Amino acid sequence: MNTNRIVPEMPVVCSQGGQFATVDHMEGSDSIKLKKDEQGQHHYIPTSWVTGIENGKVVVDRPGEEAMEAWTETPTH
Image (tube, rainbow, N blue to C red; front, side):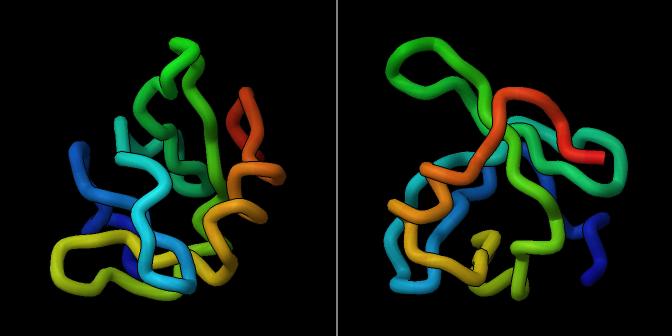
């Protein structure tokens, strides 16, 4: 996966096609920092979840609810 293609403001969509986050920026080469949620908290997801970039969106390998349960508040290294 070429993480250089992941850029700020890209929608992050789950395996079911629904958007659950927006990219804030890459955090190193292993984590994607997501924009703040409704509570003002940033979250991170590992790049290992990313299956591809499709139509300008980051696609991950799991349903949105599962991704939101597993995301972290600190970068994954």
